[in-house]
Image 1 (cartoon, rainbow, N blue to C red):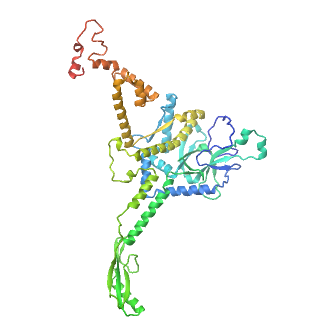
Image 2: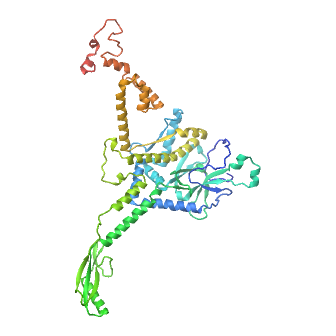
Image 3: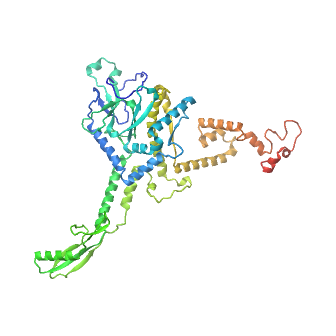
Length: 538
């Protein structure tokens, strides 16, 4: 870019020229496209998008104040980020990365430093919940400009309502394009940066500070409204369900307050009194007999307060001469006040919109540690949803780890582009349903192996059983073979030859009961150690 941006930029190697294309690359991160030509504090007209995003984020934060929505979000967060007192919630997995052990050790140390800067061991719940609710997460990567090789020194959270990613395209005049080749004409130069305003990006004309993209860590939900070019939260589907549940609960309270008590109708005989006299007489009778005591819900006291008129008061009606005289009747209260099927329906709808199993809504439901057949399909679906959340949230660690490793000179940017596909993050699993499923699958596979074992060498090979039945990969098979060999040499397990000899009643190293020192056959029992014979091992 021609103008200087605030923050730092990582030095990149010269890019290889790309082929011509008339379509701009889609970043799928909700960045706002603008036409270039500006300066520091450049004004960008993105009123509609920013205002909608500001309102959406505010609405998302108000939604979690609903108890049912908060409980569902709490289930998702607790399932995704499982912290305990022994281990950190997430670890760096480098088993598929083909680099030296020294580089792996340095990468693990820098990852621990990133977790320390985030205080992830103590604040993992708040960080992930904030990302899940808002749908995006911004952190400012603070470094020492004089000593960039020291790496990151601080990570500061940025409110998503105050920052926005912008993609700036270079617009050229038709006369400038004629002198260029086809590749340059079709490929517009673009620059990415973040626009930050401490007062918020809600005004029609948004001015702010341009920040270099390498200085900001941006992690979004991956859900995008392509029509408005906005990133949405996972709570977006639940907006209607939360509003419906809130309205149905409010209407239920109003109905119960108004229809629950039984009210009386007093028909007062006023005879042939004139209208004014009849109304005065009716008021006198009302004041004489109606309840004058009022219950104060704030203090819990009973007061004599006549100036307040309640909506639940009794009815007083005059009756002329010739009627049935003074009469008192009772209006029945509301019926079916104990039915809550509509409320339960909208609660289940809310949980379904957030991909949380409905069984978790029932607090009295017991947790059954049984066979995997008892695992519901909703729980399996929920686990896949949690796995997707972990994968998406891992982009936060990926970007921070990239910056830290490059600043400290451990790897280059080119190396990172090669390594990043093999870097994974292992989250602590705390789901018993998943554990039960894995145990059940493992048991079924081992039962099948036991049934096929007599036919090994006749109809099946060992490699076939390991690949098709046990589902072992080439890497796993190599690692297991190395482990077996090492444990055999260490004497932790017996080799197949020694195990077969033991089953036939021979000492290890014997063949056919003939010792190697002389040719005199011996009784196999005579060569057995007395201690072993007492233990009944042979």
